[in-house]
Image 1 (cartoon, one colour):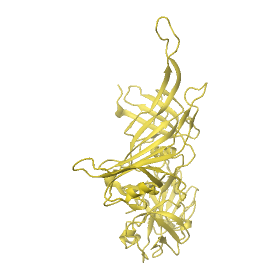
Image 2 (image 1 turned 45 degrees about the horizontal axis):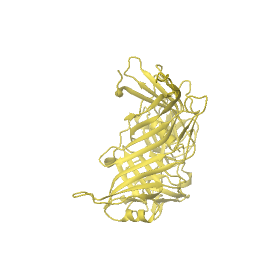
Image 3 (image 1 turned 90 degrees about the vertical axis):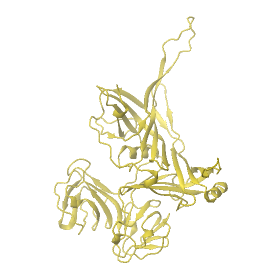
Image 4 (image 1 turned 135 degrees about the horizontal axis):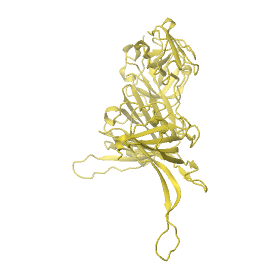
Length: 487
């Protein structure tokens, strides 16, 4: 027999559409259930027989499609959920600078020297002075943490007086990742429109971009503004050498000179909907069988992605895939796939710090009860004579729709519905110093009406919405992920 609790779902991002490499590195995907199908399609003959019977059914093609459900946790870079999100958005994650040994000792990060605080790495995008770099996986505990780069370099960035210790053989799990930047004492200030600086040139910080979210302020008092309301989330609208203009400013935002403060600002990776298709190979292993059966599906594209935030519930989602070809076998593509990540699942009540509409948190008297978002690429599976299965996956319009249900405490949202006023919606889910931000930069409410359904009930307004082109982000939807930030 086979049990659902023994399913092993592994995923690979394909380089060539519909082709699995000869020796693939598969990654285990976390799922709460799946409806993937690789199955033949049959039809009956239309021949008329005098015995009133049918001939054998005729195979016409194969169907290669299905869905995967998940609970939202931080989407680790190159993990299956991140790969699937990129497929759903027809785009690629714009990642901040990093180096990663990725399971091989001394592969990319090769030495840490206490003298000069230098970390030797393979060449790549240069680390830049004032960037905050998050180190993890090093053997010596003193080399793990968040450090400010004092001298930038592509191969020997320095972190002077940061407490690094000698490490001549760097562990296989070692990773360096840019997570933000830090100003000199008293340099970064809070202005009416965002952040200002004198010495630090914001344009030199690699990875900052218009539309990207930032978290202002660190854990230590010396790394955050004295005005507590400033140490929160905001979104970049423009970048100059001396000014980071922001919107979605927190309530209570005010000027603060940041006297004697080395202000920290955190940011992460970002992805927006685009036009570049990416595909995956899936393998489902039914490990409860004496000899496991493996069902392989290739050329899978995420035609649809859904996210659901419900009060008193875990944040959930799903992907719907369409693909090219498949097979079943008793030989796994990868007998030792990468383990699934272990980041903790997020819930709507405990981990969503803010849901905003038009740049401001939706709070009393219109608290949000639920938020649902759908990305639908309107894909189509193209068949052709001589090929069993699909020969291509066509893409239609990227339609981003959803709903937001709030308490009907005032007519604020109803007025926007009736007037057809464009607005924006965002949500910030954070846990264990990691965060996932969803932004729909331009939406219009398309339906919804408050009603009193009976006695002793809250009056709600369930609003449907549809995204449209936003000239600032040139997108319908945007995800930001923060590998690390500080409260």
